[in-house]
Length: 224
Image (cartoon, rainbow, N blue to C red; front, side, top):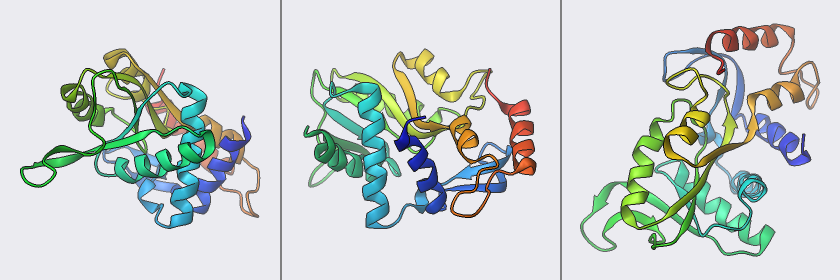
């Protein structure tokens, strides 16, 4: 596993973004782990988060894109932090763009924040996590309606590796449905590999009991 991925797992734990226990998801599933990107709240945390996203995006998509699109609402700070980090790490200016939940009819009118989308733009979409792919049902039509753009791919922070609407993972379903790549900084398998029975800052987050709970969860909801 690349070092930045190991560091990112520790970063999620430090920020209490990734937690272990019993959680009821929006889908109704009872999960032994939960990720909440809303827990990134400080300047230092957002700066580091943008750097991790920038590294992952560069690893998967290189420099061949023009715009980073972050769907409202959580995608807005993610896109801003990441374009700043991308400029610092790789010396390329990427424009950020997000959508409003409701279009404005005065001032800077329209549905978009940040950069306008232009014909020929290559776009990478950035999100925190996706379980069902529902957000893409809203996001993809919005950006494709603005201009003749090409979506290079989607980047999320954690691939939960569980079934979406069918038997495949949400990220796999997105690729099949929309025709662009969908990747994550780390997968849940990476998390287990890194934390299982290994102390992190003096604490074992995934012991035998938690590992068994995760295995049971994937036995029921794991993607093929």
